[in-house]
Image 1 (cartoon, helix red, strand yellow):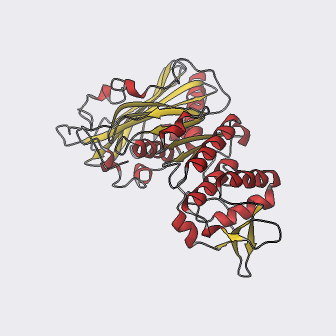
Image 2 (cartoon, helix red, strand yellow):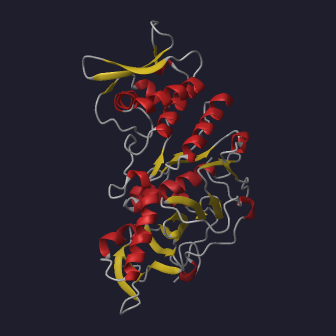
Image 3 (tube, rainbow, N blue to C red):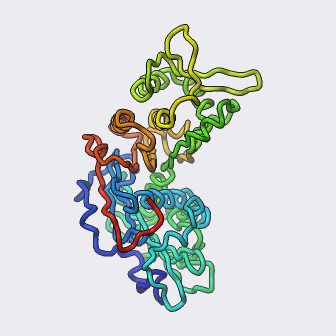
Length: 417
């Protein structure tokens, strides 16, 4: 049986030759850390990407022209994040235009059964060192996981393979190191096996405890990914929003309610936000506050000068609105954002990774530079990381940024930017 991308099953999770144009400073061995963070994103076969490996730092900025695959890389990271959070394949690919079928490389040849698919993975750094997760997804003719591999501490900790295409199961083998070296059991073919392991393994042997620790490290990093794309039009449409449910949505349409919560709960964080807004909004800024209406609604306003009339936030320009929303994201965290953090892990040991496609979209050079600098300052604290794409490549030259230039791929262009 061959894979959806035309390779034998044993090659499903093996990376093609590395694209040397995409090498970054993140090579070699890495020290252990007590926080799980995404250290590398691999796109072995995803849209226009073949054998792409992206080294990730506290602030990683993708650059390149239209069609170079910036959006595709961030999409793939989002897919992995949703799978790590326990989503089904259909749910994980739903936000991607065209779904999983649109992610198959255009030049990928189907096997004898007409099957094609995608391959992607990541490396998570944490207490166990580097833990690698790779997954092969069949997108055509039906959506299913056909192979998955979790490796760490010198062991293959989990391996799954599709043995019988007629069944909706994959055969899973995980490291035990007990009376039997491995345990075999079926797992669903529509969910990431790594995310299911904590529900299936009791941790009775040292080997099982190692598997659980690696799975939890990978899942923790993936669950802490927050795709963020503020939409100025939606933010303006919701000039006044209901008070309650104050977790910032990825499109930031409920920004006034979240601003009210931040102001009420943490004066230091609110002061830092006001200071950041001064760097990204035109004209004087004395304060950023909210006004409440009698019907349980709240509106965000800028106070330009003490005692003077306030400026409704929705009257700001597109760049100013996006800057304000992204600054709020960087200065808050999982408790304020619509993300599903791991409740069993102390917040001090969790790291939020913000995905921002078109980080500088609509902004002038000053605003974009201030936002990158803010990302760097927050990244130094170790609780927030930024993975974004920028249209201005000079932004990636900032001292705090890891620049990842993506070359134009003329032979296999797809619809992503």
